[in-house]
Image 1 (cartoon, rainbow, N blue to C red):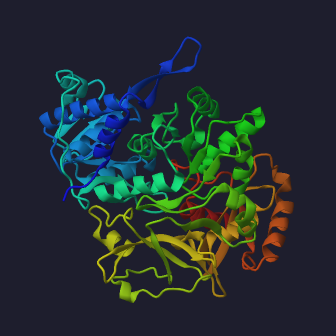
Image 2: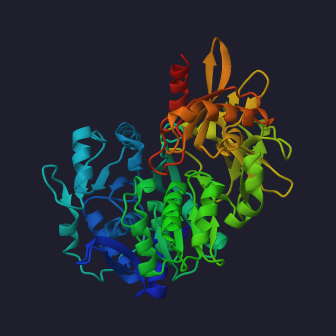
Image 3: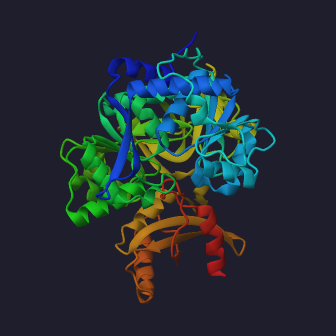
Length: 551
């Protein structure tokens, strides 16, 4: 039985509000130096995606065909993605921030038959040999030079604007897309999304955050940009580099919010931090916003405290918890964090991510680094005790593409044929049913006397005014495990102050039972972090650095 898809949701919105604007896209600058925008209405988006679907089929793209899409967030990105969904093809979406080496590995794994990309992506594909053994259809969205293939604009130009297209009837468990994880907490893996997963995500977000058709959204992450029109929102695509959100110009973000009366916004913690610092320095408020969603990593309470004065009392900042494999899982508001849970976080209790959202079943199981083949093999833990977070629900994906070992390690089938996803995160449930995040399972540091968890330990050190951020790593020294706290100081701190700060940090650590085992503090000039969110710390790179520094 066929189900709704993102493509059918777009068609529904075109029927309901055809002449409303679906997307505004930056297009150069006007004579005053301001960002200029083009726009497509919902009807135009529906018609353009119909034309693209017809053109892509004529070029040989068929139902189920894995198709790499490398186009910057733009009108083409929206229309092409929806067109692929209409055909029933499988878009392969990779994060350009994962690095050239990982990109090549991911595309080789995906074995795509078609590649749709702008000129820059086509040049990189040729030079670096991306998926050269599997690709047979090449389509250019910009100039077509030495690589040949098809020219999209030329192919579409022969198709009338009002040409209809019949959306392929798809099943709920049919593969809709392959989304690669960023690799910020391990090897990048292709997450297999079914059509049912996407619709469940859209429905969950709409219910959770009271999203209404007609809302104006500023999405600073491509996937959320795609969700906006499916929810009936107008997406204002910001003028920024989507691979480096932490470097987005806050002046341009503010200008877009003010110019369009933006009501809803998505941003990574690093982007929100920069926007908050700029707004505080300039005395800027954003009265049109009524919701802000920030994800990718826990949003520090000090960032929320700095950002919320820019907003009205009617605006709430939400921090959903989840991953590429399952989103959203939990959610919490800025009011609850600042009013209650932040104080416990500072004491080393972990970061509260809120209660599981409607439709998600969440269980805390005993920590185990191995494969769990059956739910019958899974020991649960009592509330208040730290274990591994596992989830089941309609928005939870079932497998990784071409990675059977990774799928077996991350997924647990139960007696009802449900698939539980192991988040790879550690945490616990409190007496109110809220979930507290304590860090990645792979980042825990096991000492003879106790096990240390990253988030609780780092929160204790982060209380010091001189600390910008901290990272717990475990190393082997003289045949024994040792915990090392790496510290990135605030930029204003001088080397002459290091000795006193180290002494104060150790005093702080030894005054808290969570961190009494930490006796080594190292200062690092600038932590390696993920490009996408600029928030996930590469502890795997810090550990060998710590070994070398101590040697």
